[in-house]
Image 1 (tube, helix red, strand yellow):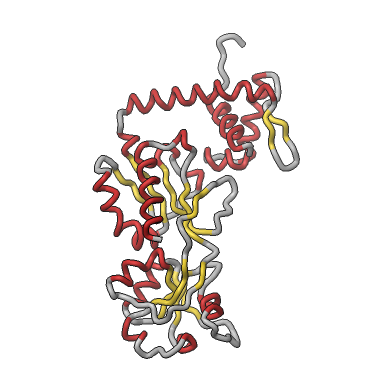
Image 2: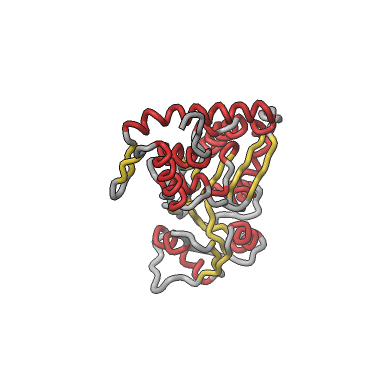
Length: 294
């Protein structure tokens, strides 16, 4: 075996699986199937002549041999990464990929982005308004703002504040509303796929419902907020998204009642070793900015 090295793909599979202690999480990170990761690691074990993992029914454990082998593999990948970055210059350190849904990008990020760029003029932006699957993200400059309950397998996220729900509408609609129950006579709008919405708000507002309210649906708050602004109905809003719209007078809160969403926006970042300068700067700014706004 003198002079031979295992294929790079086998080593990448081993490093990712060892870091996550999960073939599934390693597969998601590398854009492969779980069975492909398992096969590559089996091939590496055959090449090395000894097992690298103790496979338990619900968990993985590194063997003593694997614990000794892992630091050298990770060191080799770091050297490859540093050498490649040095070859390419500073372009990758300056590239900031932001993956976020359309509503967060339009209503929260865009109005505040100037403040970030003012302090970081060297950053080159690449903003995607669709949540890409984990296996499609490029780890060297990926920051994702994802909405949900925060229970994604193999993904860690930091919740960005507490999201509050309440109705918003055009000022002319608000003038004809005397109490929360009056909203049952209005055309109501919400976003598909949400765990909570109008039902939660009516309960918190003390409105007894004989049946579920009739709701009109859209796939994004960008549509429902515009409908509310134009006086075509009343939309369920979120504080993190509606601050600028309410401040401008384009829409108002007809009542003070509100509820806390169980779902929320989460900041998803790659492992520290894979974050570049732009991603690191953006993460620090985002946490400070949204913390100050909360």
